[in-house]
Image (cartoon, rainbow, N blue to C red):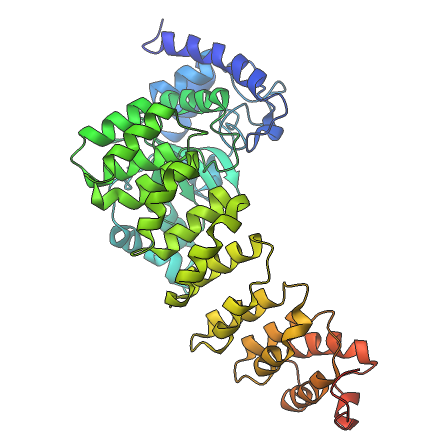
Length: 457
């Protein structure tokens, strides 16, 4: 019997339940491992690896590979686990430390859950910023950076998770990026808790719904536990973590939603996230809170409606009309245009004024969105202004937006663009030639034409 015997038995049972709950392998990465897990490894193999690398593996991890399983049914590929599974025992050890892993793996783990951005930047500066670093020094820096961490599995691209081998956080799982982003620790106290939580969230469906986040990057627990901790905690970051954990749930119970609503007034610093939680679960309950929030945070209101209630965008059209001209930043305007498109109306009267905005990004988004309308040919004059703009981005967007529109009034602008750009810049000539093809012209031949006498074909 081990210290983790009861948990090991629960995990074995939950592996079966998880596979049954996700028969179509909808959870991210499940198609890779299909919830398969092979025969456990042996004490002898563990001892050999520990001796080779001069390390002592955390008991929680050893218990897993000794009593739950190791690799898939062939033993050659990752076993069931978060993302693309858990590496077979002893495999991919050099995924972080490319050379001399026997030398560096035993190093003390220098990263920790509360490290600041400044601490990480200083720690990784030579690897991330020194382009002249020699190979030997680079290997040493990798050993310093990733020493004391055993790679556990891939999350895709350059992301992976590992387990801390020594020090205060021994046995904790940490999310890593081999390209140098700051690591983030999972919230669980050890590998088995992290693994069991993954199974719980597969079984509950929390990892299958549309708005699920990456597993292990937010706090776990039941909605009751998370809400209770939010209320009792005096730590601001812990409160934020609780709300983020709730936000990743598949859905919340009515009593939880009601309790969250009652907390809005007494928690002003968390008001926006509390409203988001309500909106995700029930946009009608959230509506009066969203309308109030319009006065101070247009962006969040537009985001929440688009993320959770875009099918009801038409119900918000009057609200958008009343507030659209308060917008002064690109991100808020971008989400406003997303919502307007979802209304399936002619929103041109709201968009056209922004085509003359002093912020380039807003101007670009306005022209792009105007180009999504079926009757965009009715707004040729606005597009002509875009074609004459000083910004290459604006010209490029105007050309793209005019796809499918043939109007002789455009030819003079197209000719001017061809003369202004004798060589390609920012794909302007490529898009210009797409538009000129409708007239049987190119950027070369259009310069030999004269302006048409008639304004329309």
